[in-house]
Length: 245
Image (cartoon, rainbow, N blue to C red; front, side):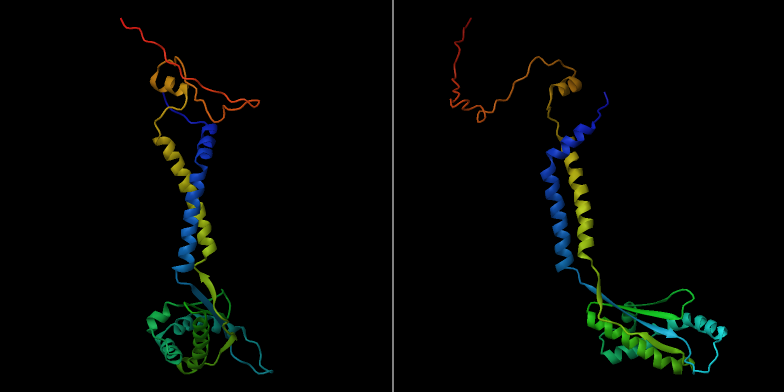
């Protein structure tokens, strides 16, 4: 006979193992918080923006062709910003103990579609260093691009502020750990039920073994069976005489 489990039995199993589920969930959440706050290295991010646009006098005429040219140059500028030509000078100015390749991994350069604004983002373990590096990259690129491409169409739009922490996020990690711990706790609860091969009810004996139940022994709680209306119940043990053949 195929064994099925009812919704009532599911709730009974969860209720029975509720303390175990809470403990496992709390352990997972606590471990995640401890690791996030005390063992993982925090990373801070700072961003600066540069504008690719030729400076014009008051009488200069707006030219759509010039804007399109600036947009086409942005991809080239993005590559130059992360090139050793710029990064080596940034390393020298900031006295960084890293190579241009290592610094390159900390930098991301992007711009919105059809936008002349370029975002330079730096991620670093030190919030002050992330700010300094981002601003130094912007100023170095602005000065060096004049000699590299013989153009003067870069200006700094926004300077980088003190880096803000972006990872790890202890709250997010602990939330994920709480959900995972809850799932593991529920899984353990049902695993223990599956591994429990004892019979809890007489109907289970009939279903599993196919044997009729002749009687059941009731468990009496002695502590509860005391003093009804001020009198204590006494239980006397008697012994019957055995008759031999």
